[in-house]
Image (cartoon, rainbow, N blue to C red; front, side):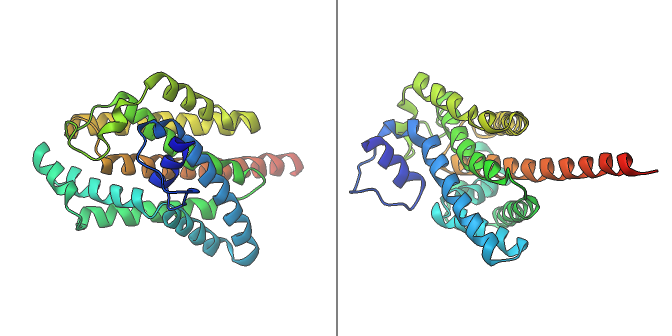
Amino acid sequence: MNAFFSALSFLSILPGPMRRAFDARMVLYFPVVGLLLGGMLVAVDVIASWLFPPFLRAVVDVAFLAGITGALHLDGLADSADGLFSHRPRKEALAIMKDPRIGVMGAVTLVLCLALKIGALHGLSGPMTWLWLVTAPTLARSAQVIALTTMPDARGGAGMGAPLYASSKTPAFMGCALFLGLPFVFDVRIGVASVLVFAVVTTLVLIYFYRRIGGMTGDTFGALSELVETAILVAGAAFHHVSVSSGGFILGKAISP
């Protein structure tokens, strides 16, 4: 259980039963932590939907996601945007990403990400909303595992997360496959949509990171997680909108004279 509590404290502000040391095996539990956060998000969403109108409910959900992770991934997204979009050479881009100050590109990217999440959550409704809320954080952390097991360390082992690259790849991949199959248990269409979005976004982002800086850093792991999570929530809103629109159109044709 040490590895699980290491993952929990690494990816969230949730405390374990006691202080845990850094454990490289915690990579295996990243999707589990994502599933836990997704379950908590569903509970927050239900309570917020009782208390607030839809837009405010969406803001509360996004605030919860940011707060429960200590805004760690959002910080990584902003730092990554500052460095990667700086049009500087690889070494200079990596140096910019280590700077704790946020720049224009980081601020713009952060605002766009939060706006997309709020808009997506505002557009999500219906009985299967909970499945999208669980799936997004789970697959976002699964994307981190894929990155750790397929991508090199852009800093050549000099970063704090260097030990994580030594994690066993086979168990990590098997664990990811299990969680990727989770939404299919409840709704095949949502399973297909979420996994397709996950595969496309993860692949494109990792290719870009590799070509731009030669691999991953701690900041790009956060960026990847935020991008996958946001993309899945946006896909959920689009899925719901198209389903409702198509259903209304078909019903209208059926009852028209």
